Image (cartoon, rainbow over all chains, first blue to last red):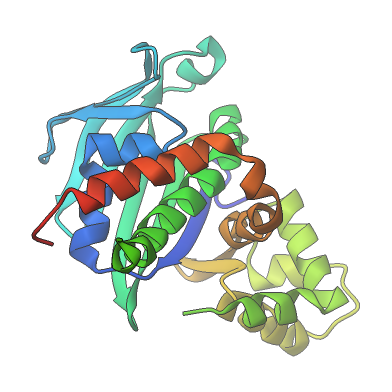
Length: 151
Length: 108
């Protein structure tokens, strides 16, 4: 119900970490695989670079290109689903991840939108994003708790 | 940063839960859209939305002249995972992999 010809969802989480560290968590493929339900990005991390998200078995889940790349601030991906024909047929969506320092942490906002009304793809990812972002938050924050307890 | 108390206090009010239900049905509504058909004043709705925003349960995005309100499912997922998550083995193994990863790093 945003615009007549757009579907979008917004997700926000606050993570107790620094913008630099959170940025690393967004682009380090091994780290991403730990919170992104096993999926792993394969990307040329620069503006205009290619981007892919691979299933654990190596098949391509999604692909596209990087449309915003401002380290520790903004990462934008032009993103198309590749594994489900109905989603693929909807074409490209845009996923924008924005980092903003707040207090002793960082506000991470993810906006995923597509230029069409009632997108099935955007509705489908709305189930996945909260899990991915909760995982990311807990991985980073628990990590900072785990370290001092090193035996 | 919003605390757990902010989230649970925001959810404790039936009018605010009703606003979340309406956003769950149709996301991205303006204040005007949300007021339609509710027996609440515009000021009351605005105040409840501000509380929901402060708790990170609603995110307001300015698009042109209007502010659109989105239900943010991340804190709600965290509430669920708080008591369900321990049964989620893949996450536990992810955490131990992270621990190994971090503890292997000397300079951070």
